[in-house]
Length: 179
Image (cartoon, rainbow, N blue to C red):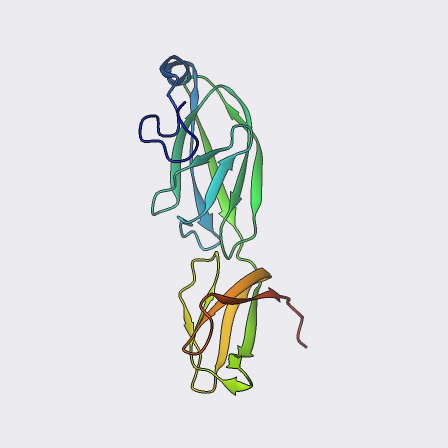
């Protein structure tokens, strides 16, 4: 409904109240939690029902509860700093609760080290690892920095006096086994 883009009249579309009511009446619930290996909730995890694309809202302790139509589902879970996973063969029966608890394993850590320089001179500034929940990292007086990250590919933006705003570099964190 409405125009493309932000639409103050229709928002994200109209709700099919009859279909929603049908799910509530004839559907079931999945309840559970997403926790790390130590039993701590992973509240920033993304839990998605693959068949519908619906994302569960997780509470601060990593718990969730959702109503779904009767059927078989696969849940995918991902979170920064953890190995992504899935739970398959989740059966939702009408009027019943299905318990689903997910344990996430921490991803192996790596370190990105370097020096922030401009025209051959060390620059003191801040680095931000884009698309992560990490806080900005300050370089030391010599422009040196060290950032711990799980293995993967990242874009890092630098901000310092003398740099063009938004300067970024792409980097990969590769892990090697040390003896």
